[in-house]
Image 1: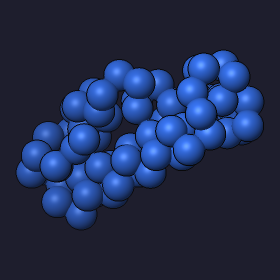
Image 2: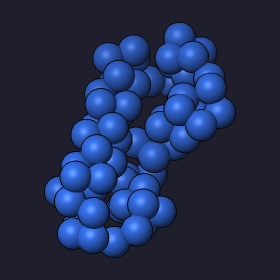
Image 3: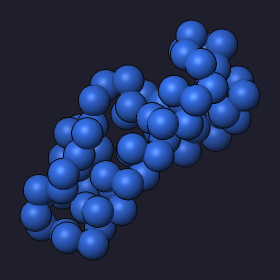
Image 4: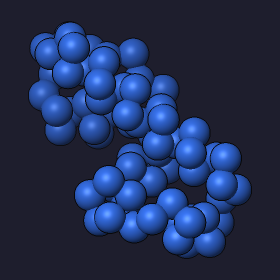
Length: 67
């Protein structure tokens, strides 16, 4: 599994939060109203995405246990 496949395996809302925050550089405080989610949910999305992609990096080539 490639990095892009691991990224694509994330649920759409988790992937969007990750891309807006980590790639586009939008601060978490700005994501809350943009996505219409509570702060804790945005944090959970980022934590889940980071955990999945870190696991993918540790087990490169294997299917990571993504959310």
